[in-house]
Amino acid sequence: MEKIKMTTPLVEMDGDEMTRVLWQMIKDQLILPFVELKTEYYDLGLLHRNETRDQVTVDAANATRRLGVAVKCATITPNKQRMEEYPQLTEMWKSPNGTIRSILDGTVFRAPILIDSIHPVVKNWKKPITIARHAYGDVYKSVDMYTTEPGTATLTFKGESGEEKTITVQKVDGPAVWQGAHNKEKSIRSFARACFQYAIDTKQDLWFSTKDTIAKIYDGEFKKVFEEEFESYKAKFDELGITYFYTLIDDAVARVIRSEGGFIWACKNYDGDVMSDMVSTAFGSLAMMTSVLVSPDGTTEYEAAHGTVTKHYYKHLKGEATSTNPMATIFAWSGALRKRGQLDGLTDLAAFADKLEQACFDTLSDGTMTKDLVGLVDEGTAVTAVTSADFIAAIRSHLEKAL
Ligand code: NAP
Ligand code: MG
Image (tube, rainbow, N blue to C red; front, side, top):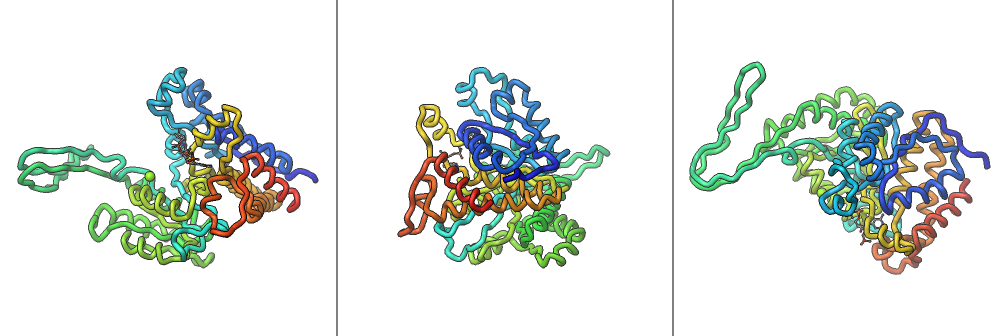
């Protein structure tokens, strides 16, 4: 078979530990034999980030802005324990995902991969629910304090023009806790645009929820900005037959549980943090959760939602064959290849992405799966737990048949 051609390269960001091992297996077995792969390669492995003083992460993000589509492997975000594990680290480098997100001004959309033999805990969920979490501000960039005596707290804003604005927060008669939070209009606007753009790209309804009945100015601003931004997308939504729908967060929670799924739920930072864990757990497994970063101009970066699966990596280093689930990482590749195909008008490339995903589903339908899924499938389903290598080999044989 002649290999499928590409015109524009993908930005390829390699990563760490077990996912780096899977990365190479996926490329060697499932992509390179079939696609004349063009990538701009950036090694975001921890030691290379250290050698380049993290410049490689910035370069990869800028390349993504230039080329439009990236695929990223999971990476270690160093903490104290990692500093001991890797004594050569000269700094506790920041989360690559955080760096890339701020350069691309992007929003993260997380969606589960559904299969027939694994049913969500919520019986009526038939289609994926995608959570879009606003990733700036609110309680994540707030200050808080504890006071011990009766008194009054005020909130003051000092404008650079010299103008001041002060309001009373509360008068208290004893010890109290306080918190000051903010968000920026610009960030809310980018969030709104990324959500509308992604709804159009994936042809799904968009829901957005806040608590604007209580936080009339704060959450009211989110609601207002979304309404304003929607004006520019409305015609496209009508043309595609999709809708934008705003409701209160408590009403949204009730509706989400009763729904069939198949929409995007945009959430403020805290709501998205909490709800994405609830939704992903109810759907099954972190290993089946995909993640895509979308910027307001439509630039996209695809990855798995899970981390580098450290425990499995240490088994791998001891020479043991692990049964780590490569699904989310394969879908990061298929997502990026499909997007590249769509942007460049390469129908073969987009069709290849579909076939690769179908080969994964066919393999799982045969009952061939990694260990993490075995406990999740419906009772009575015949399954064989296999290693990552055997799982990928089984996908390859389905893929070869389909091509
Ligand atoms: P993790 O890598 O997601 O793994 C946590 C546990 O979840 C694993 O030990 C494993 O459970 C299970 N698991 C996750 N993915 C799996 C897969 N594909 N197949 C099978 N089981 C899977 O999270 P972590 O251990 O908290 O973090 C490890 C490193 O990843 C950290 O250094 C962190 O900084 C980094 N991280 C990176 C990203 C990213 O780049 N996007 C995201 C999160 C974390 P069992 O051990 O029970 O099998
Ligand atoms: Mg969380």
